[in-house]
Image (cartoon, one colour):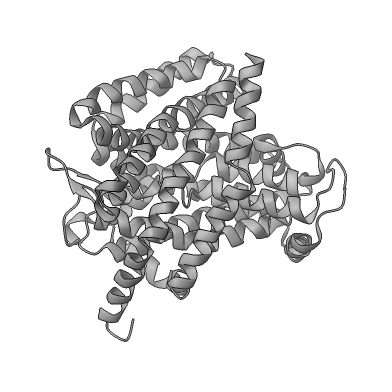
Length: 452
């Protein structure tokens, strides 16, 4: 067993190694330049569109859910443990400077998410039951042609497997252990409750998932953000020094301090980029499956809304976590992961601080389970057809319970590999179809009144 785990870890390190990170960031840079920086320049316009996208009756075009619900569904999979444990891990391994490279990754990742969402809507299909389905496998098949269908199949296969792991059992396992530590409730009890709640939501399909995530995501994000802001403003005199440390260490590396072992400039960049990608999932190909279900007649509109997921996730939420960790001095403690974030919040906000992180992890993980159920459903439907959807949902719910009570070393590593392999077909499609992205975007903005 140890030999298998060791082998899978080596494969995972290769899949998520420097070549993959260069491929990811390089694609984002290429798309950003091809779009002439509009993904950064149009952030204000994106928020205007998002506010208009809240009510279904105000939307034009066809779709299953509102543009706002599509964004919340995609964000329910990204605003999660990556914002709490992932940021802490990046700082533990790379120091405060890693945060800067997370920002850079996010700014270019916005273009990747923008392109994914455009293609998802443009090449989506209407299913026999009237629902909409889209994502990398569909824009590969419908945009690149039949000779590339095998690439779409591979993406769907990788996504279906990853959904059972990183989106399901790994999340329920995290919740069960967090609840056991906080309330001494047995793993199996948490598993039963979590499986029941999951079943009640996912059996209703994307519409019910969207109805739940549009409430959970803003609620949990607001509580977490308010807690972080309270800590930051309580220590506002240290804000300037914290920002200076981030920018300085981004280009010089980080010297050893306290329990922190120090990091070279290469390590700072590597861990910042890697954790940024893990957090916002730009390029992974998961989010466009949610955006493909949005009610809209213009792919670019949904692309503009979709890119906000990366901005809100990394530039906003991850930054707040990082500032709390740095400003409280917890980053030199030698702790890492969720424990480091919990320590920082507890020091900055004695009493409720630790509870904010604990409950945040629980809500974040549950919302991730819901979103990835839909992603896996779209992938399974692509491979086997509509007849496979209902059996898939039942199996998914059962695995929520299983994940809560078993050790997941192999599952975590294997699903991590599948997650990484999803990226390859998706980025190939984004690069191949980039002329479509550029042309469609240019036509959209040329059609707008000059005042916009």
